[in-house]
Picture 1: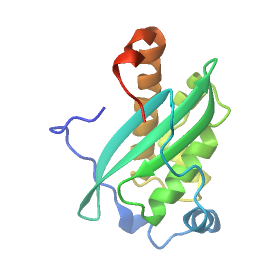
Picture 2: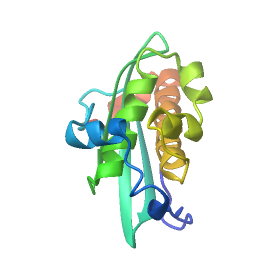
Picture 3: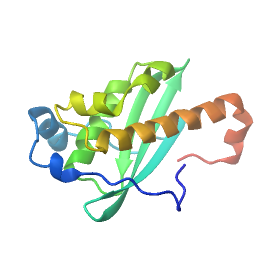
Picture 4: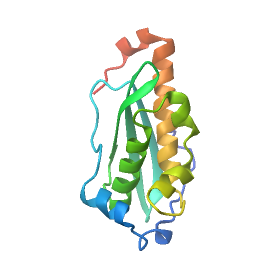
Length: 151
């Protein structure tokens, strides 16, 4: 959950905008796991400043027996690199246990795309951690789900 007075990380897009690999272009043209999720088990949200614009991303997780079965992402600004990082991260975490997903580093997401880490990987990793935290809250106190209506 994001706080309004929290400093917003700055994404250095200039370092990656001309370095689109074949995999990045593939995800830009055919995003994987794009969209919100109904009946999710965990939702994470992170906001950052991208090219003078404040952008929010959401990561949704469907988890069974501590294994991530489904993952999706959404953003209020669906730029190309957001598709690439969102697609890569959600593909990486599918089938992983919660513990394994937490071990994923920002650099791993960027490396999966053939890009250097410039802030996008950390941004998406932060949203993943929040989604896992959200899942753990409801797992430890399932009655709380009754008080929050999920999309």
